[in-house]
Length: 94
Image 1 (cartoon, rainbow, N blue to C red):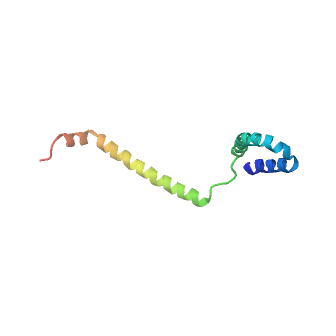
Image 2: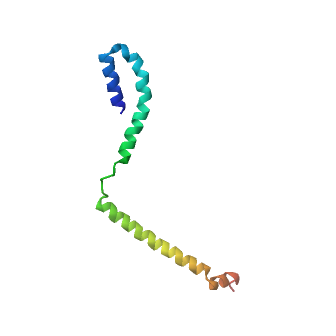
Image 3: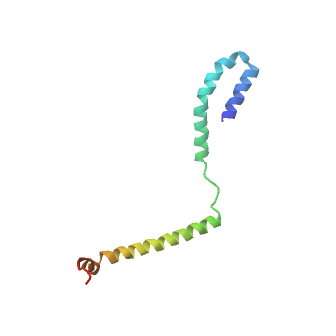
């Protein structure tokens, strides 16, 4: 986008040098909205890149590991919340 604005400025400078001084502020101000429009257009297009199979396999392995960890934490919490564990904590060991 900036190179396009620079090309337009260069074209104005070469074709109509008298207008270059008046068009430069307009080109500088227009650079931001033009850049935003280009970014919006590129964000709107759907991504066509599919994830690589290695990425999918890695993510699935990571998900399986995290699921196992979550299940272990759930069991630990259930064990700690059970009434028998509360009695063991209340009575000091002899």
